[in-house]
Image 1: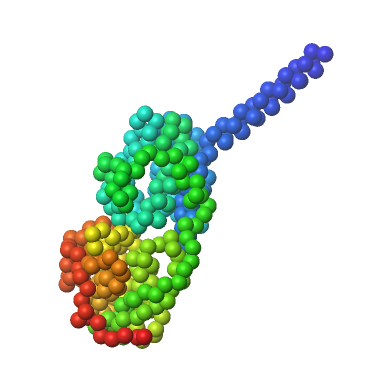
Image 2: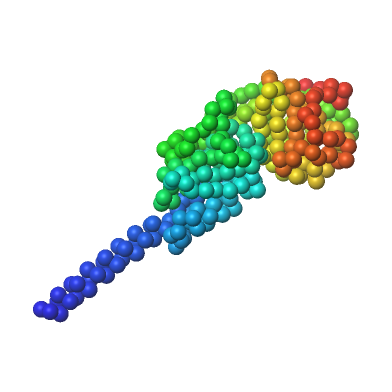
Length: 305
């Protein structure tokens, strides 16, 4: 009889131990939110850790978030150098970024903010997340501060693409075959409405022309970190490939391919080109990008339409 009771107690202990182990394993699983490749949809990868200390856990998850680079899911954050610091205060996690954070277009910024919030709200001790830029509250397009947020504020972006398709005509400027003149081309595009018109124009310039009488003016692997328009100036933040991957054409062609194309859009009078967030640079030692540039009609040599 005693032996039966002993075996029963031993069995119960084993079951309890197994449950405890499963609970511990679940408690150490975190979903890192990233961008589904080629889409405007957030997806997750599972990250497991034994770390319990909140501060260490924040740093660990932050490292995973900023360096996420899986086959189908990558970090939604354009450049990890834009991240400045964090602090946890009164159960609010403050994530502070450099000024370049504000160069992202609206869709990219919402996805980025949503990914941060939904990732870190899983950490015990965090009840909301606040995004700041240079230690000042992030503001919306109307200049109103964006309050602290929770995962429920982003329920509409989980597993969904922020897009629908529509058709629009855009005017773009590519290069002629000899690389010394811009050719105007009007194209009808099926567009992803999750992107601004400015971003759509840049994406098509990178993709290149449809007409074989024209050639592309920008590197095919050029990355656009952000596009925004303020007071008539369109700010375009490109990666360093814009400077290092030279095209076989006059220096003014790539620059004014961007400027003239964007200036065709309503509300854009001038274009400020930045490279890795910096404007105080020279393009091919010929054109200064320090100040915004206006369209130059004298570089246009014809139309392919």
